[in-house]
Amino acid sequence: MRRERSEAYRDQFVYLADYFELIRRRGDAYNIRNEALETERMACYSERSGYESQRSQLVEIFRGIEAEADRQEGLVRGRKEASDRLGVRFALDSFIERHQLHPEEVRILMVLLYNESVGRSHARFTNGNEILNLLFPNPVSALKASRFLDVGATLVQEGLIRSTSDDDGSNFLRAAYEVTEKTLHEVLGAGQRSTLRDPQQASHTLSSSLDSPFRVVAPRIHLDQVVLPDDVRKRIAEVLWQEEHGRTLFEEWGLNEVVEKGRGTIVLLSGAPGTGKTMTAEAMAQRLGRPLHIADYAQLESKWIGETEKNIVSVFRAASEAGAVLLLDEADAILASRLDGGHYNDRAYNRQVSILLTELEAWEGLCILTTNRSVTLDDGLARRVAASFEFTIPETGERARIWKSLLPERLPLASDVDIDDLARRFPMAGGHIKNAVLTAVRKAGVRAGRRARVTQRDLIEAAAAEHQSFRPCPRPIGFGDSPAASYS
Image (tube, rainbow, N blue to C red; front, side, top):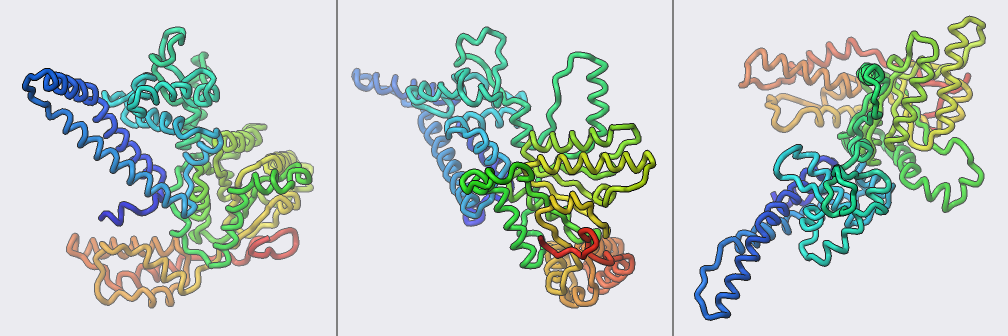
């Protein structure tokens, strides 16, 4: 068990849960510290004066809680260092680097995030004195750290936290603080709302938010969970390197002097449904420690004049403000070449493609386009795509790995189950293998309830039915009139 807990963090929210547990234990110690130390001082004074004293157990309780908190802190530090060594990055890491926060500022920020997680519970630590004394038990250290709550400090000046007190702010240590929506937006990928005073405008914004042209995903899939050919995995690693070391690429190595536009990384993933395109995009965002904004053309397109163009601009703007990876899913309709016809619909489509190209040219992050179909890319878009990957039907060995990953150890399997045989007999994508597994499990469950065992026959019948409905993409996506390479 101890070995398992020392493993690297792979999920930001697991890391936050452990860190919040550390804050809770420090808070328990904080709540009894003053009384315990006062009791100890009185006992020492009585004994020095020649009187007998009954020492309180509060000191022992306090020291026990402090020891638990120290152990928790060591656990969190060890697992986070292991994550850093593996190159695992979270949205929180990017947030800290982007705003160049000191370690003390990070600790203050984590307390305020903890406050958000416990809601209006009595366990909150809101005012400046409480926060500083919780984090820095030495009074002098607490006073030194108070500069990080001053009006000129990064946390306050950049709007990462705010005072919620009604006074004039003359005593910032007595003021209460909370994280701003901007911080939640960047760290958790939460949507950010504008402040509105007009009730009609507020109603419109609420309606628009329900029909938002994109959705926000906190990535949970790791890249090592995605079954990919070795060459594709290597090239994806190159794309991620550019995203992680863009400053080195453009500033230190001087490419910013010769590349004025098009500094973002535009990636195209093509292939049949179920081959892992969206899963790969999520894993790339998780690897970078960023939220994922997903939009598909059906959400962007509007029957109202000019609304589609506005939606395209708003999607790119929201992703940029959040520091997110942007995924334009099922972008077939807007990837194709512009039209030569003079009809209004042709002109409207051409405007939409032009707006998309303009946004891609100005984009400085990672944007992933996916398509299920074979299309001829617009020449302007083909020039902007830095890397393209064709997702084909996995080879037999890769299919066996997918089958194994989808049949957990706790699933009751009959002794005749042969994964290698299934992989050989049914050449289909991972999404269809998943459907076959679910169908087979349902069959077994209906047959025998909780005592069921999934048999090879269950899996074969389910896989055969799924394979019959599977229609792989007939040919790879193309650039102009020439066939595409798998990477460019």
